[in-house]
Length: 253
Image (cartoon, rainbow, N blue to C red; front, side, top):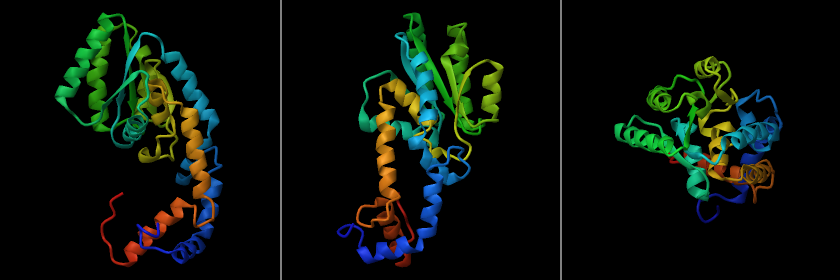
């Protein structure tokens, strides 16, 4: 950080002192099994109970005839998954992503679906929306589900809905007896890669989500450690704070 961020150890020490009370809040949130606050997203890396629920469903759905998982979601509902897949390049079931409305992408997806089912295989739609009302997700899901219904009478078995409890998507999934995975209410989309939003499709793609969580847990320990020389979160926030004090107006994260 000394060579790249124009900050010194004394700057980080000052910020650490100013944030000491908030660090206590973060440490408490990192152990909050009920996800009562937005900071509770820090507990995701250590939530073995939630991970086991996801892996149990992934094991059931990861059959020999599963050829592709179509991740239907936008923004935080798919970008974390895409980033991890792109970084790790797992060898497993193919993942494809449907976020913005794109006619050609949907046409190609429908053609693949038809071929897969013609060959005796299956496609799994993972529809992801915290609210259950995201326009792009609803549109893409409707198109793909309509095609799925033409290809198999057991179409509901080839869908998993990942959503916030009480959402319209959950209501719809319950109506058709579709499997549901929870997105904790206080966990925002851009922070959801370590909850079912990310780890379900990643598990099917061949990512070892236990190791993924273990790595996140180790990084969490570093970010909650008061040692200014090894805490990347403190270094980052100090660099941003100093830039703002120097009247920087653009933050490209």
